Image (cartoon, rainbow, N blue to C red; front, top):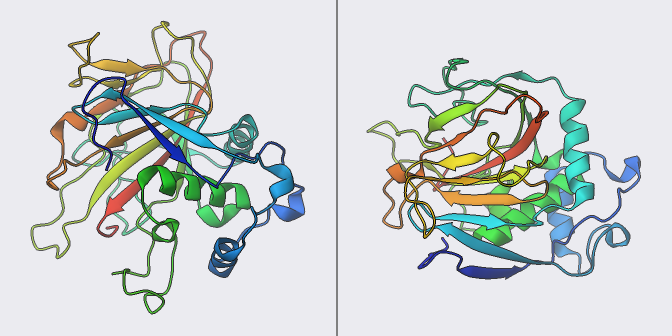
Length: 291
């Protein structure tokens, strides 16, 4: 967990999982299996290096200390943005749903009762696994570096390989691609839900990483990600983050002591007429296991 002590504080993360600067041929973007991902980890050179940048250092800028919210510009390259948009545009999208607590109920772990409420959440989405392609695999590895965890926690593996793992399952959900049309929104909500009292591990969505695939003009109303209980040196009644293609926003749904952070409530502002569609990708990471 990153600890922000003041606004605009900068943390730098060097990652070997560099940007794709050109799209590999289709035959090289075929689905991966767990063995493929393990083999890629053992390679000394970057996978598909002829299509990748040589170096990448990401900057996390603290835009709120409570809750802990960080902007990461250029988390995705334009090639990666276009690839995800193409995947989303060619997928079957379903109406988004919410949980009884107000957050998304569409986890990719244990199925839960889904409830659709267009007054609270009006958008469409689809789910894309890490194994869908090498580009998705690299994005997960880059996300793991930003989160300061080993990338193997974000994929399925054998518990016999390493005693660190308490489960053979990934602790991250599949990437959720979300489309907001004009007039659609997601009212303020929490990403976490409360575990059952008798649940052994008390699992919870630990961190949320939002990836923006489209942009909005800074200063323009509509389409922002809002944190109504956050404050910084400029704003004392909530903050808003403008979408910028390639930018990521990282925030934590729990406090350092493990309790959920009520101030992590956030929402997606209504996309106004004339703004066009808004696309994002969500990556949710759980602790200690995914429920």
